[in-house]
Image (cartoon, rainbow, N blue to C red; front, side, top):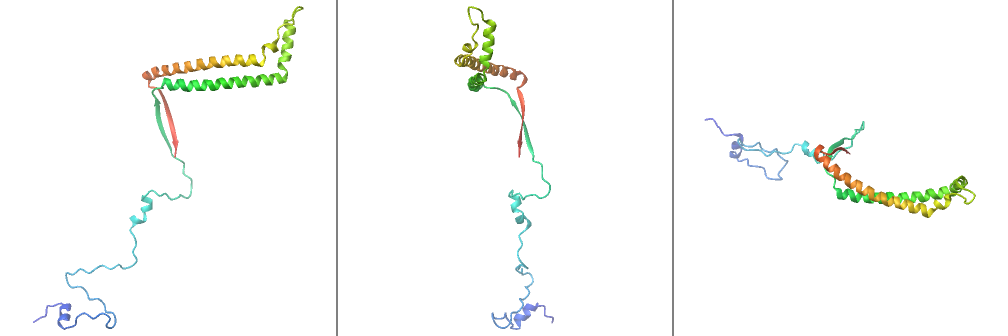
Amino acid sequence: MTDTRGPHTQQYAAGAGPAAPGAGAAQQPASPLPGERQPQQPAGPYHPPQAYQTAAAAAGVRRPRTGAGTTPRVRKARLRVAKADPWSVMKVSFLLSIALGICTIVAAAVLWMVMDAMGVFSTVGGTISEATGSNESNGFDLQSFLSLPNVLLFTSIIAVIDVVLATALATLGAFIYNLSAGFVGGVELTLAEDE
């Protein structure tokens, strides 16, 4: 009668059980029984998959590129000025016209001092006095007419008029722009942003 038992069954039947730990040299592990799963042992050092190696790249970390330089990208956006607030235009134009008036007064004072130091008023005033003079009078006195207080007063009056007119015209211009933008859509602007 043929023995159909496997080698492991025959071994246990013969009384050769598993070797005691520490008894003699290390023996090779027995091959598993049919239908039994053998635990997988790592054959070598563990290497992470490619997805873990590229985790830094997936997180957005950019490595410096070598070689030729790349041109920066420019983002552009087209915007349209649909409406101008007349109140804000009036405030801005008022402050700008005040600054312009102060600059005008200072420039007039500096110009008068420079021309007086060069002797322009005395030379031109003497010529005008001789041309307009007669036996009874010495003619028109340019130096007394163009004195520094008179020049500053005249310039201040012009600066105040400029402040009033510039503020009124800028506010009126805002109203006119709003009316025209309602028909044609307003002024279009193209804005660019460098990355």
